[in-house]
Amino acid sequence: HAYLESRGLGMGIAISAQIGYDSGWYIIPILARDGSVQGAVARAGPSRQQQSGMRFDMPFGQRPMLYVPNWKYWDEQPEVYVVFGVFDALSMAAAGLAVASPSSGKNSLNVSWLDDVKKPIVIIPDAGEEADAHRYAAQLGWRGRVKMIDYVNGEKDPNSVLVRRGKEGLLKAIGASL
Image 1 (spheres, one colour):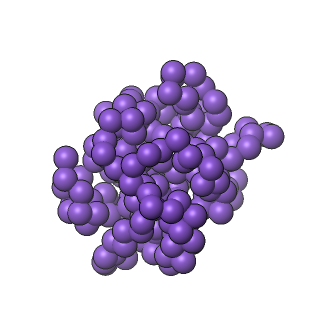
Image 2 (tube, rainbow, N blue to C red; image 1 turned 90 degrees about the vertical axis):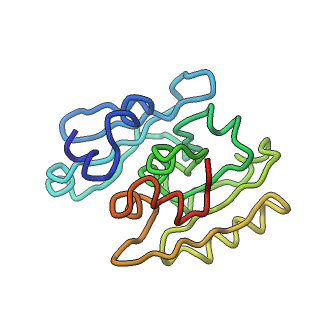
């Protein structure tokens, strides 16, 4: 679990997100609201990434889908967030936020996945992904907006903010209060 800890993702989020481990890969199940497994994303640990040259993988033939680490947060909080990476989503959930991410990165987001969301949807892009975030927000109409994080000291995404500043620092950077 040292790798997850180094990414700011402790045992609490690993257990609640049901993260598994197999041969150097961290397996993140994509669960439906009822808890049934819909798919998975595999994230290579450092040594596996070096050996395979891959950071992420998915089961053969799996289509991109919406990954929501905590459906209770998603259903109950007054606004939801969308980020562009599974570890970024786990980071936001570890901070107590309702969040989703496309399972295959920013280019795989299908805004129709969010059609049933009738509350504000705040998109938080990684550094350099601002144009994509604004394009998606425009497609969401009144619900969509973009929140830019002031990334500092080599930070590039919500996970790096969590690692450098902790949960409270991530919440402050986003301007969220729980």
